[in-house]
Image 1 (cartoon, rainbow, N blue to C red):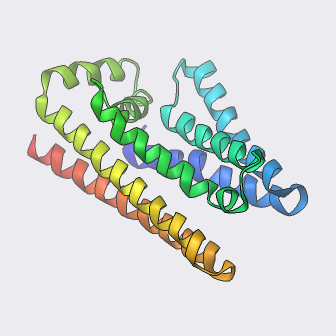
Image 2 (tube, helix red, strand yellow):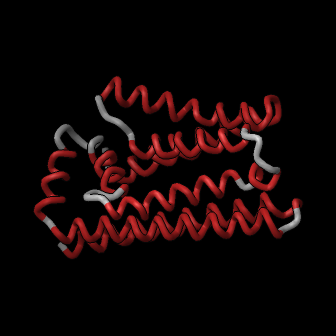
Length: 202
């Protein structure tokens, strides 16, 4: 699969379809059911991907885990503020996981990259494993991407938690959505440009 097609597929599976399912379900079934509906495309994709290609999609698994955590917070006996802040709290937790993964041999971005490359052709993931061991520059670049994404996600969601606490209800959703998509757009653009620069310098 060509790189641009991989990015489009990842966006459709992990962002577009869950968001569509959530929007369709929300007016009729409420927030909890809408969250469960948003997880259906992710679970279906993970199941299909593993059954068809014997491949486990790490990115979809992370997104599905974040949906499950959001649902757990929503249905918990927590206070109103905590329930309203569930999404940025979960996103911030994912960012912390990125940073904590730097303490182990292979950080989270390694597994996300490996999962993506595995779809290109059979054996591509083994080649990536070998490059990780043979090319210190690759390991450094993966760790840098982990740092950037981890800090970016933590900062984004800290801002969004602040929005929930200090901004009027009328503007919360609009500002929170603006911060979220702006952050993801910036991180994605940086990742693409950094990857191109890395490949060019090799």
